[in-house]
Structures are given as C-alpha cells and as structure tokens.
Length: 318
Image (tube, rainbow, N blue to C red; front, side, top):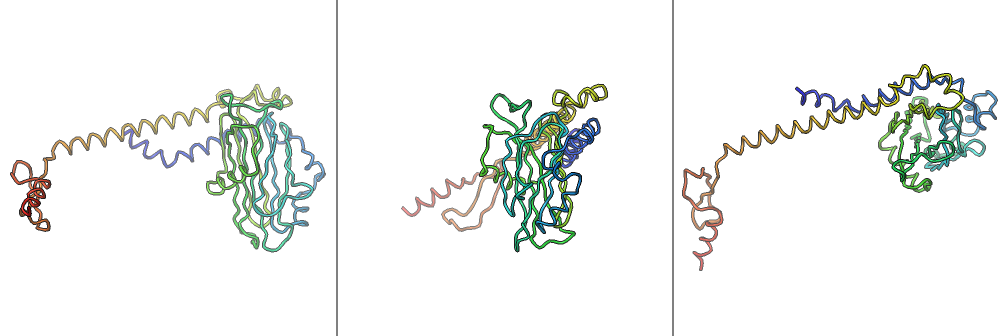
C-alpha cells in the first residue's frame, strides 16, 4: 500500500511543491500588502503613467519587468546577460533594490528588423547590506530569465519566463556565468521557486510587448522590513514559516521509503526466481562449432560445458 501511494505521489511531487510555494507567497503578499511597497527610482520617473506606453515608442518587441519585493531583504549586485535585443537606455540598467520596494526595468529590440528580446538577470540577496551566507561558504542569488521567441510576433505569441534561487561560492558572478543560467532556465523554466525561506514567482503575458511580474518574498519573520513587521507580526502564523520546507522533507522521506520498499520487493522476486532456477549446460555435436545447440537442466545431462566442447574441438585438430 505504501509503495502504491508513493508511485501515485511521484508524478505530482513538483506540482505539490509549486502549490505550497504559491500558497505561502500569497499569504506573505496579503500580510504585507502592495500598498506598503515604495517605488524605485525608475518607477518614480513614470509618475503614475503606464511604462508600456513608453515601451511601445522605443521597441516593437520587448518587456516591462515589474519587480515587487515583499521582504525586508535587499536585492543587490545585479548581473545581466542580454541574449537578444537591448537594454533600454533610460530604464534598462538593473540596480540594487531595497526591502518592500517596487521597480520596473525595460528591455526591447529598438524596433530593429530581425531583433527580439531575451536575457537573464540575477541579484544577490542581502540583509542590512550583507550577503546571507549558507554554511559560511555560499551566497544565494535570485535569477530571472525571459525569452520572447519571435522578432515577428503576434498577439497570441507565447513567451517564456523563469525564476530560481541558486547558490554561489563567491558574492560576485560574471556575465559569462549569467549566460549559463539563462540557458539553464530556458531549458527548464519554472514560474515558482523556493529556497530556505526565500520565495519567488513570475508570470508573463502573451504578445509582442508583454508585461512581466516578478515577486520576491520571505516566509521568515526576521526577514520582514521594519515598516511592516509591527503591523503583521500578530497576524502572521508561525507555522507557515517552515511548512513548505517541512512538506518537502516529508515528501522526500515518503519517496525514500517507497524506493526502499520497491528495491526490497525486486530483491525478493529475484531471490525466488534464482532459487527455482537450475544450472543450464550446453550440448552440441562434439567438434562442430556451428552445429545445432540444445540446452538441458543439470540433472538431466552429463554433456560437456561450452569450454569443454571447444577444448575438445581444438584437440581433434592437433
């Protein structure tokens, strides 16, 4: 019964984890509230106007990347790799983001023929300006990837985005390494990501000038900003802090148990088959290597083994 449950669970494991991640980030967003987010320097320049209107004047294929940081953590040391298209001259240079902040970045093809838009950006996650180290040797970065597949797109063109958390041995990474994460996420796109207490999700609309919404949060109370911590600490459920990680651990334990049960069952089947199997010897006309071969159970024949046959055949020619 355990094995059957595990086999049923395996195909849905990633879906379960993604659902839990979405539920957790929804909870954090609801507790903080979008109205608590302060605008970044680019968003302030638009003064309430829709950035997509500006994007349409400078490119006919491109994205407006809208980032919402619902944590008190900072996103610093941005590294960008532009695979196709260009960074917008005014709003395309990624910069550091503070806690509980919203910002926009624009990337497009400058309305040039046979140009599209694709690339990857990452930020190092810090607290009070210091990297959050794991095991005192690795730092975490949140990686975002976008890919608009066509330079001659239509309103129904499906675009690709992905988000993920990756750890690095050094606080700084190169543009060449950022390219590798573009390639990684292009071939394994995910719209939800969870690492330790970090949470992220991303979505993109269809068409030539789609909007992208990237949301970052943390389920840990220590990662909340000072301006919102006092208003949410009483309502925040402490059990939610680790439940996604706990769910993953429980699911992993169930999978491991299922594997053990499966291996045990296979060994039992193999043992039973081997127990009832008799040794098999080969019988053929002596001296004729190409003659018809017959097989007999060991107790039913006193014929030679294959080595004995070929040894005798060799001696007959000596």
